[in-house]
Length: 132
Image 1 (spheres, rainbow, N blue to C red):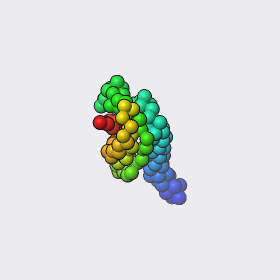
Image 2: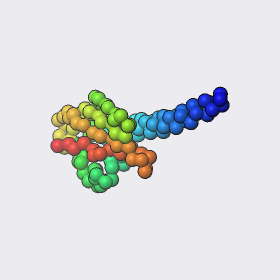
Image 3: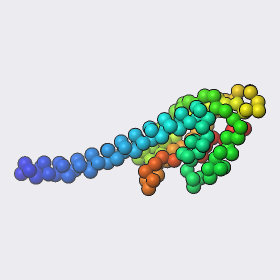
Image 4: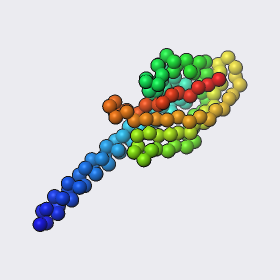
């Protein structure tokens, strides 16, 4: 009888444990990607930034054109919220930037969405920010 209880407990807990570790791995991957993305934004490394944009939403060339001749000065995540299933993360972002042709500093707030792609086991950005 004791063995049955232990076996049933293991059968119930094992899938829950596997699901927990799968979610943990997914969110750890998000953290690594977000750190890399934030560093790229602070350094105005648009080539790296565009690697994170979902290719179904925008081509790499179109992504690079979005940035034009700007230089990012500051990048801050003001607010972040993950969906209950941890498949999507919404962020509110504040950036400071200027155009290389004009040294006037501008500030912009915008929303961005990260979505987890199960097949690629990777997080993708819905679209990069647009700048005037």
